[in-house]
Length: 319
Image (tube, rainbow, N blue to C red; front, side, top):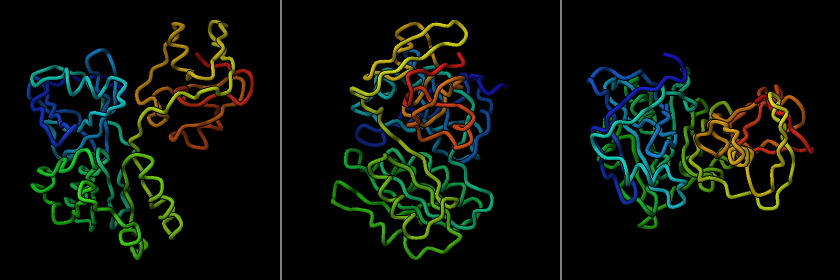
């Protein structure tokens, strides 16, 4: 099966986890095993309307007959989460891609610290299960978001890692103290942290300032679509295969504007995180604004067209 292969799945269960939070259990229509995945993986899900969105797998990697995903009904949804909440029903058939992992547990991990907030708990649940199954010591700190208290509580309390988990309720004014959680950890501890940027970034900064090295910090981000870059730099892009030139306005991304002109670039997250819209620049210099590409990939001339722009007047794209 190729990396782009799609697999048909049936929605076996649609469960209300909390206010604005659902989980979906996806199974093969014929009851056969699904492609294997590793803890921390996500899948692309094609949902009603033709949208493709990425969702983390939150069940055990030992489960071969199902995928479980969590979907927060984001009030700023571009249509994906709303469609999953309102249009997808038990018994519906969906298409999913092969599991991919950018939040993998390194093989050398001897102990770990897991921190999550809100919907960020979904990949952490799978990682917690992996660590428990492999007898790797860890502590799991989960901050229940204000709008969805108790989300995935049943999954946690019924798991083998319930004893490793400390939960906090924002609705009761409870907070996670970075000093208590992040300080005085053994030097071989790996940190796995997932949530929205505004909550995530201060914790990461604190960890880095207090001795956590980059190779021990593993990050997964859940970020709403960036607001339009109002009055940002105007520049042109040239399509190498056709010679067509388009002027990208300051309030639209490259992917958004080109799609309006009939040039479709595959996208998924539209946040500069997943890498779906990675394009090679043949001429010009990118203003990188993504959270995905490595320094080597940038040096090779790649950029993510959903968020990044141009430093100069023109980019020639390998399209």
